[in-house]
Image 1 (cartoon, helix red, strand yellow):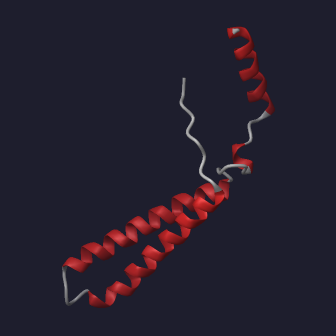
Image 2 (tube, one colour):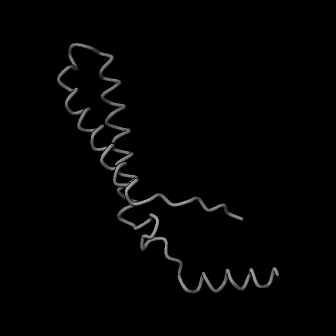
Length: 91
């Protein structure tokens, strides 16, 4: 039996998109310090990658409607009837 995780709320996903965008913005602004401190190269790369992944993942879930009350989580009618039949058979 597959465990279903609780879907994220829409506002949570929007905040994650904004946070990812802010990390990418910060990485872009830190690029001016590249020649001075080599350790910042690692920080810039980490900020850019983490920000991009965070924003892309949350943006994709928003686009597909995979949040509480979103259209992407609605079950098709066939799936609902098959689950109710399985539960009735188990009882």
